[in-house]
Image 1 (cartoon, helix red, strand yellow):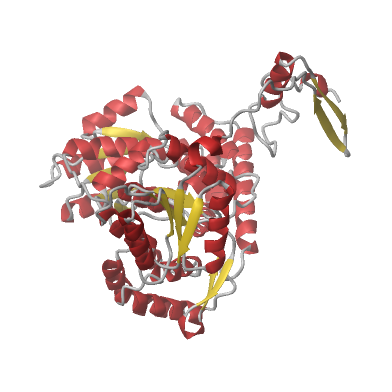
Image 2 (cartoon, rainbow, N blue to C red):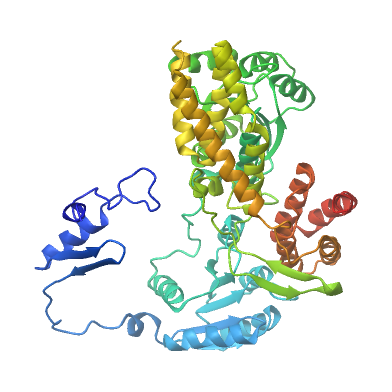
Length: 583
């Protein structure tokens, strides 16, 4: 009751605690009150704890003088559409939607048939205005159909719309590359209507820029795909997350766990760019950079510091050691992409074509299907886990919405930080503050990447205090240990609650059958390979070797971008290792 009087004021929340379940700015109700007042009305609320709340609003409105002309009558009437889909229910549903908008719609069952119908209609001077094409079709798929439609000598080419359930970054970039509009399944009447209106009015370009892909992400994918990077980082959690963020834009990364490894790897390979953590065991990032700069071929290699220390003197030390720039931890994807693009672009490495692969973001309902050899496919949605000490949406965003990688990161957290509490106790008892600062620095970086905000803030304040030579009080160290224990306990409880196999409907033997079925489809350039690859991605056991999982993810991603030959070659080389790992 004491909060009700404040609810309609700007920046107020019913629950103002920092641990509240639901976030927000506290502006929604204030805006509602303002709009109601502008319309001569008011707002209010009646609330009873444990029962619920009723919000109300009044406004003074008058009847319109005239009925606005329907946008349908002016924009869509008289248009023609063609639906291309091999599934009868989908064809009928799309035809009915077009017809409900006043658009005359025809339907065909294949891409080959679509080419004939579109060409014949154009020759009769009765062309189609829109062609709606399903991406996944047997024989000639949606991508190939679009390419051939655009190659036809038509007097009035139709606007092509590609329909897919897999609307991740690679699908959007592929659509942009082809110059078509992408529609995500399920296609609703509202979504289709809005797109048709915008296309008909000319307010929407066919090569629409998809805001879900950041500008620098798009630039990296288009221009620097398959660039080779070296990442030197001792924290396994950070390595997993950074590798995932780089793979999103097609950048290939090799990992070093300390400065000595980084020096050795840079001696063998001239990388396009190096990301270098500053604080690492055996040899730190500054010393490693100085040595790498003396190596043949690495005098001009961009080296970017990965550091949470962004004070002026730290930047000076980085530059003096031969580094070009720095990226602050926790790593923010857009910041990472913008700085990497800046330095790759300066180096003059330019690739005009799309990369071979871009990892996918796939969501949707659970789907069961049957393929060859009695293998049952199970596709599962990406769901956001509910955790209290870890902000799951932050971690999911950092791993490109891949739940399997999310789970692996939490396993790394538990495996590599379970002993940190005892180590803190030991170093504090000896008053070994440099060692304490190293542990706390590692915790801070890990916590920032996984969204453990409270742990990150506590570790950050402690590190700053130690940096300034102020030994922490015992209760402060105890507080950090408690924060870490909360994160570890919750991560471990979440992992223990997972099914033994992340998709329990798929036995390990069936996973192997699925991999062999995929290889056969790839070798025969069969369009069904994409669906089988998608199923395989959700039915890989979580405990596969890291390198093998990365290669299989690369197979899946190349398959989804129809690079069947390279996907088949990589999968064939990985089958025996997969079979051994599944035993």
